[in-house]
Length: 544
Image (cartoon, rainbow, N blue to C red; front, side):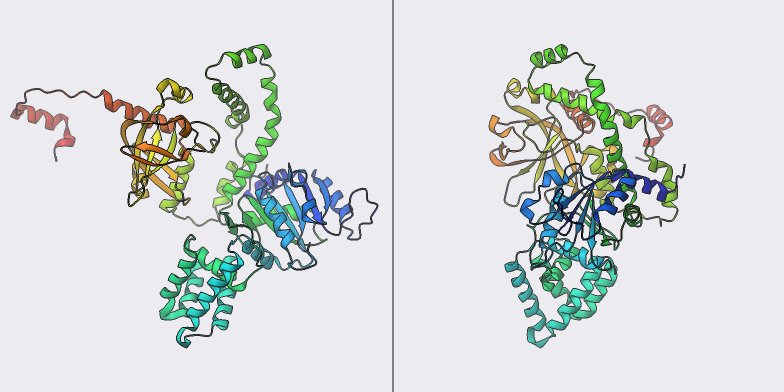
């Protein structure tokens, strides 16, 4: 077996694309009797069949006729004509379909067909502009403020400078030039006024990171496709020959010239060429295995006696515990194979790393890895009551810092909140430096979580348990808004949930505090012989 990274990655892509849908305005409708003037459908269908991939065809006429669930459900690949709109505004319908694809969890690949196969950068740039937010009204105001700054006291030619900013920022956005080269360009262009210019841009796009607010500025200055989707948080990764938005990968091909082999190979080579591709392929392989193994889940469940199953449902207390029993059944059957089968990528690690320069991870990168270590990502915001391991944000308003509290109430009591009369056990935590958290690691009582700004932060827990009364209306984590904290009513909002073993360790230590007992005895100074004995047997105290 070929264990090179390229070969393993290619196999993963092949297994990842098993069902496709093709949307075009020129192809014939099914059973319409129309001729395929494009000559695309038959060869496309036959070539995908050769790759064991099914493909559906949908003629685009208007966006309202696009039935999202029918088209995108259980599909892995969307093949989409870029030039759907023959009238202005161009590309609007295409971008809206792309947005639907990005929102579809199971659809991870988008192949864009264009009459011009060499305009990949322009297509990617328009897609990125679509996700940049900003209404036309705000865009015009921001642009005028920038123009006024440049032309202030006759300092510069706004048309010339803005043209350069748009051109260079586009290259930076598409990773054609480095961040360092882009920063050098801006400093050379604005000279002694650079800091003042940067402060102005930052004030317009204050919610963005430094590199992102210059990118958004360029989108606005160019008025790139003034139709935009509603502002939203999306993860963007543009590597020149492919684009990633959240969990969806985009590639561009010239219309009518691409077969599945080209398409699969291009996706594989494009993603493989990225600086950090290993975890991307690892997640794809996990998805492929989950899909192939999911057919086995029902076999074990069917062996359970139905009368015993319903007897358990009728007798279990409280009723909500039966839902958890079902979840555990599904979870056990769905993940048991993980302990038997290894990832094919593990055999390709050495080959993957041999051409990679050794890079030292930043503290933020290590903290994010710890975030995935300790947070239970299977528990999402839902219609459920407070549970063991839930972390909440306490905001007392004013100049007070946000505090975090962790629920350490036993799980069985959380399920029966009336049994404890609504009094839950918590411990309180404060943010600490990421560096300190990494140094303490598993020797400390800390957690790595994501705050409201989606930044990874470290919480150090004060291991002194206390109780808070949570009234019945505030127990649902999706609707909880306020709680009595000390002598105040404060904001009380769900943040995330710790994995059980991480929370249990904090709980064990916290509940050991109340059982400490202090005693008193008459003391006497140690004799010289006793001190010599201590020095011989307890060498670690010699220098104290």
